[in-house]
Length: 549
Image (cartoon, rainbow, N blue to C red; front, side, top):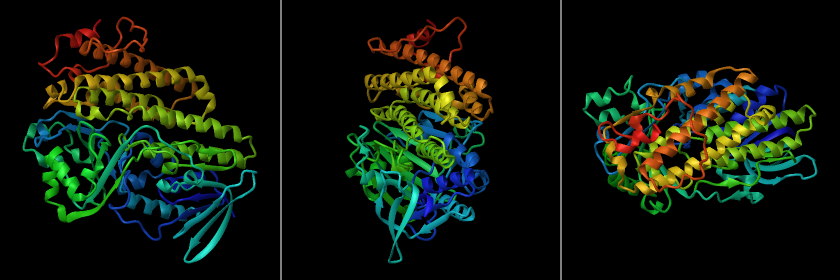
């Protein structure tokens, strides 16, 4: 019998076990994992890129920074090349940073990381049972212990536990048993594979000025996105020396039937990303794996039950690999689960918190989903997508990441006091996502974004944006944190005003009537870099004027 039984010894389950152990040194914890033995490096699981929130969870909440710095790759941010159908990457519009931003993250070889986590779990006196296949889950609705039956080496064993947490990934054992999966309206597919070679975009050009845009010249450490209408391709380096390549696409625009084998995927890349295809042709014999998912995005009706069971990671809900939110939402759900279990152990009235935390989690999930659903046509738009990325990351760093870094993601007092600002920020995000989608449709493909060819849209040069990233590290008391978040939301209002006015200047008949924003006061800082919406020497006459009204 355990106080906590975790179903699944992957990323979500192992990190939850470590977080519980850190908070409760004497808590009996058991983890059941179907796989037996070490995971392979490189060709294991996707979800290899982290962003700031998830990186902070691994490094600081779980104290794993030494492993990340020494055994994984420090990420050089995210980078985009608008290269659909083109062989000249150095002549395409590029969005990224010329130097690393202050608060960073890591590229993670999942096999190497999960092997390390497994070792750390065992060192922490957590009962990890591998080779265990779950056969039956009997969840009590009366407050009694739950019972889980599993098979290991031909033997059937029943395990009782006060708490059961499903971290079984896409198997979704409890989600399937209780019919909790929901269609979130975001219909996308993905294929991916790993090559046992390092792919470096610097090798794809002889232009020294283009190479010198980044200091140091290490674009390969970025999550490189090669984008086009209805799709994006990821390039993620792994510390084992391999490279991960994935194609993520709108299910209607790019049917998975045209890419669901390595040969088909290569044919697709030859058409849409010929420079990558050319690089991969030299490494065909280095193919390590190939897989695909259809309709990989889904929601979930219930995550945290007052009957002492919960779902975390992909066993609950999954959004999209773009912006790498998987580890972020593992961090949030694991933190909520850890808090619920802690309150139960302390004899506190914890059950009402289950519903409140579920509402918070689903609110964060829905506001992030708005960034993806109906937005995939924008990957072909070099005018709108950089502006959308600027907004999306400002919203992410300014609200969700700020709450988590400050340790206030579950602080109901702080969240209650900030409720007007949080509601306002979410409404702004919902309105902006509708505006971006409409703007992109009006631009059409091919569109005005082509005028950005050869331009470098440098995020590191946008001072307030880099400072928003840096500020995540600040340790603030309650009053200072509330002031900081309110200031972040006020900046979002200003950014939303400028984006609204810019869209209106591009398309006078675009409907922005729902965006009722107070006008900026005199001397208000302009946030949008002019280069990002008007390529130098090629600006439309109304572009800058609209922002000066």
